[in-house]
Length: 265
Image 1 (spheres, rainbow, N blue to C red):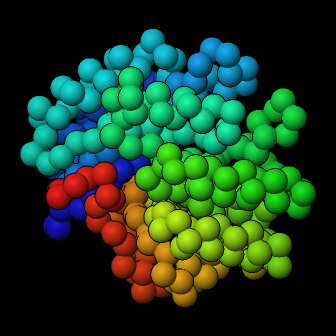
Image 2: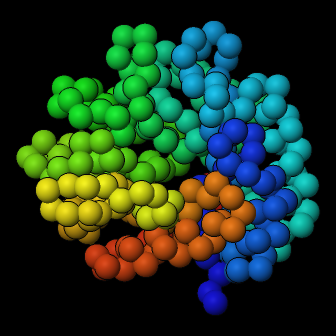
Image 3: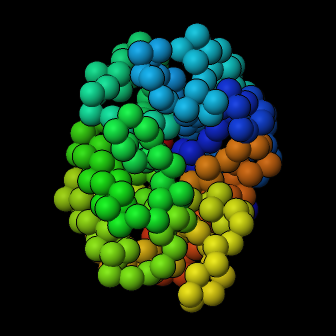
C-alpha cells in the first residue's frame, strides 16, 4: 500500500483520545506513512476563563507532550512533526506565537469548534441559529486571516448542527472557501467524520461532515485540500486518512501531501 501522510492526530492528553505518540508511530509504520503530525488540543493560559479544560492538556502537561513526541521521532522512519489544534480568540493572538516559540510547535491547526457568544464558547455542532452561525463564520475567517495556522480543520463542521443545505449554508460555505482561496490556506477533508454517527436531514441520512455539497462546491475552486485522519486512537492514524482521500476522489479533488512547514519532506 502507498505510504501517505496525516497531520491531524490526538493523544491521551486531550482526555478524549487514547494512546501516546509512540503508539501512533508504531501503527503508522505498519500501514505505511510518509509523514505524521501530532496536533493535540493546545493548552491555554489559566487566565482564559472558559477554554474547555476537559478536552485539552494543561500548560504543565505540554512538557510531557514534547517529550513523548521526541521519543516517537526516534522510532519513526518518516518525519514526525509537533503541532497543536487551536481555537481562535483574537485577544489571545500572542498565545499562538508562544506555542511556536516556547512550546516547540512546528505548526498550528485552526480547529474552529466554537463560536464565542459573550462569555460562553458554544460548540458549533450544537448551533442551529442563523445569527450564531454567521458569527461563527466571521470568527473562523478572522482566525484564518491571522496567519497563525497551517490549515483549517473540518471546515464544514458547522453543518453538523445546521444540517440542511440551504441558501444560508451555501453562503457560509462560499465565504470560507473564498477566504481559503484568497489566503492560499488549505482546508481539510476530515476522515474521522466518516466514522461518526450519521446526521438525519431532509435529503436523508448523511455524514454530518465531510458534507457532500460543501466539497462539491470546493471542487469548483482552486482551494488547496489536505486529507487527514483526526485520529483519536492509534488504529485510526492511517486508515482515516485513506477514508478522507477516497472521499476527495469522489469529487476529482487531488489533495496535497505535504504542507509548507514540512520543507522538502
